[in-house]
Length: 339
Ligand code: EPU
Image 1 (cartoon, rainbow, N blue to C red):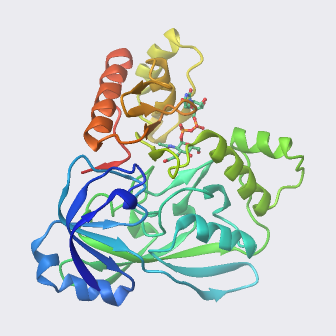
Image 2: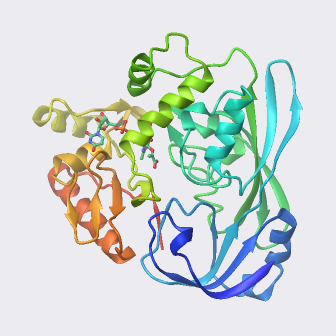
Image 3: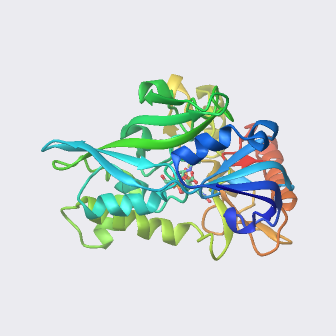
């Protein structure tokens, strides 16, 4: 474990924002993290754990300790003829893990191909795409408590998962470090999820009639690569806002004026509407203001065209929020963590 001062975070966040952290440390094992929790710098500072840095927007220098999680390793815990339990350390790159599982014909996470970030970040916001959420395959999550340095295990139920939500984002926010995630994946009779429109269409285009987990993963990679910008070319953090859930009455009112509004059923008789559609209706899609902008293929993704400051992206997000609020009376909430 090696502590450094005034470290640039530019290459550690996918928006590519050029800020520094007062203190910085890379952690490679669970034991190193436990050791870190007992150090004065950890106890004294505001701590931020960075995995892939793919869901953060820095609007200023970070006046605390940034901990970069490089805790790697994948281990088979147990297996039957039907399924396999896999413990993955939190610093593993999510997409590499997906590819590894697909290659071994272990099913359950193929729809979540190409999502940026690490394994440790996946349960925090219950990553989801193309009809699948990671909660469906999580058996348990192992964490280390900041205060005591002790290890605790959360069962799937104890994680309190919701749409882009979990206990780690709420009650345990800034209180724990996720050290590993155990996944339960299928070895045969895979439950393929191809119901999401774009997947079915892409498989058809690829001339695939009997899809496998490999072909579903390939289709998702194709869709995402066409629609979502590659952060190594164009800085971004995926969806900037969550898709809002609104009441039936409000939805009917909007639908009268915009009959083609896409929508999905949500919990408690709410209706989920795509934030990307709302933003597009407000005229933001493809707009660029100095170095910050709204992606031309997906309005939910804000981009850094080069040297945008975090403040510039933040201001753009605020302006988008105001337009959506004014036009639809819907308050969007960011999915990205803003510092
Ligand atoms: N739409 C528009 N204009 C846009 C973008 C979208 O009209 O600019 C419409 C689409 O035509 C479609 C609907 O909105 O009818 C939904 O669009 P899409 O399928 O692209 O998905 P999304 O709701 O915008 C969510 C996730 C993505 C995930 C996709 C696919 C959230 C906040 N985002 O986006 O996740 O990849 O579904 O499942 O739930 C991420 O979280 O970073 C992320 C990329």
